[in-house]
Image (cartoon, rainbow, N blue to C red):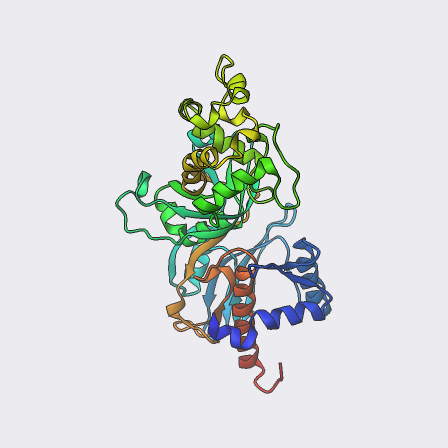
Length: 405
């Protein structure tokens, strides 16, 4: 990709789109999107440009086979599927560029092999994950909760990957809890790094989740103590329940903080432990703690935790719950979810600078059909545009060597 980027990389693509009136925006993590926040802007741009260049597009037409004749032409056998009239036709060409998109379907793989391509194993990439039954119960009701900076990693010590040599990096980025599982840029990136491994274990795994990678024990104690007395630009919070107010507003959502707190106290051990601390011996504390049944920690008023001893006790229990959480997943989402395909046409069988088959000169491959895939945020599109540019220019140069491009 670095080789292709020298002739048509991200900068070239951005300039081309902007010359066509499509404005782009770059996120802090390097992801690029149309300023309109809709892919329709890109689709419309390509369609209008193709129309202005007189490019003929055959709709409702399926390419069936690729062959060659003695005259040196490549023959594409096509099946028209418009209406009830199905009629095969042949397209004869000196140069053929194949960019079918995902090589996941067997029919596409057959077409690629007809064209002389060697196919690397394929696997879905860039997908959201579905909770296991246990995790789904634990996170029920938190749909839509998002953490903007979380760390996610596959746990190779537990579950189906136990004892494997799998080593995936911890991915930092936004994480979103959905109706059925977990998503967001960090999860999509994790799926890209572990695409083949996820497929091998049927998408059953244990994830290590750090909901606050920046958090330290000292920082957590200080944050807890600051809530009752009032944090920077925040009023004191003394009477509200601990579970209603996150110590890190805007960073760790209150709904998630409450759920983590409740999960830590699921058997009541946390409440029992804190009740025994001398710091809660004051008459005001005893009046609340003496209620029957015992009031869980999540419902204690924040004023209980204004002192160091109480803050340290809560922090000692909650820090690992926040920074070393574990979630089991049991599947991937495919319905209306973004995903690409890892694998495809083997790059070793191509002249990389021309994206041309070494065994079948005159046939070029580009886009997602080729064994290149990246993380979310425009990188896969750029792979398509860079390889497509190289293939298109090489094909045009072969047919019209004197023409300037």
